[in-house]
Image 1: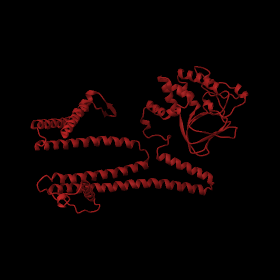
Image 2: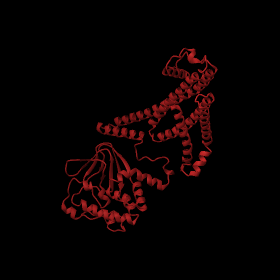
Image 3: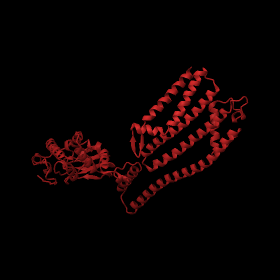
Image 4: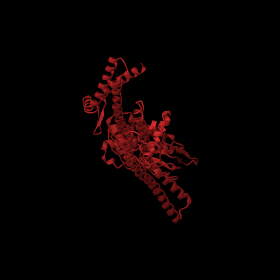
Length: 473
């Protein structure tokens, strides 16, 4: 009774699966097709005839079973086995297509050459294991199929293994499958004609598969070793250069550590500055949208950009995309100076990674991470009041003032928002001054505060003057 219930559940499942297949979308020339007529047409010329045949046989079996009133009819059982075999072939086909799609998506996320080589090596090993697993199951399945007679003759009975458990027989079958690759030996041999034919097919396939496997593994290992040797040789050349030029140990260590980080970043695709070979094939709007997605998190740290993102306007979105495209990335070594006190500020910086210290007249340093520095130069001419120095191998994003003004000044709406924000921003920070804006750590004399004025480029809503002038009060 339980088996019959399971049969009807499976029958209903496959009928529902066939109906749902009519509304499954597909990709054509990179476009997702979800039109009902197109999906129905694709299914009708694809798997529909095969599925219809299987469903028809299923209902035929169900009708014969109900008419006969017994589940032991030999004809029905044979027909049921045929259906299960055909359905297994379809599942293998669908599973192969879907697993291939999943594997392709996984490979797209692997950008490191070394990781890709290790991944391909692991994939070869897994494929070898699965292939031998299937061969072992088929080898044992031949013995099971031929054990229906009164005096069955197969490799299981020939070698006296009738009383062995299924795990024992699977282990023997897997050992036999591995031996066909030319690894080791076994005393298990084919007994019947079907087993001999299967052995010939497996041995012939193993002959080609084993040679292909050896060449693929050798090629992957050679590629991995080449990557390691290239890195080692370059660092040896660097060491010789530093020694021959008598570079002191402190600077040598800083240079070596920085280049080691650069190698690691390149191998792990962490470098955000290098161009992508297919970049030029993208349309300009797509490039702008991509740049905005790259910098969206850092732009949200700035209140002005956050206010722009809250506006639902095509023109503002376009301006944000252009601003993101003007941002540049840099990697700094330990001790690199981003800016020094007394220099003219011509860019604002987002500290995206690493460690920095900001020092003003106060000898105590302040450690910084993931914030905008010198944002005030976007709203008024500015002289840096302190020193910003990297304390570790660090990354930052720079936005030049002139490029920012050029992008913001393209629309009246963004110019007005910038002017209003500049007035509010300068009003908030006019009491305590530093390159850190409202996160300041020291004050300037009140005389300097009284001479403060908003930059001329934001004094007018129409933004007639976009020139950066630096009046020193």
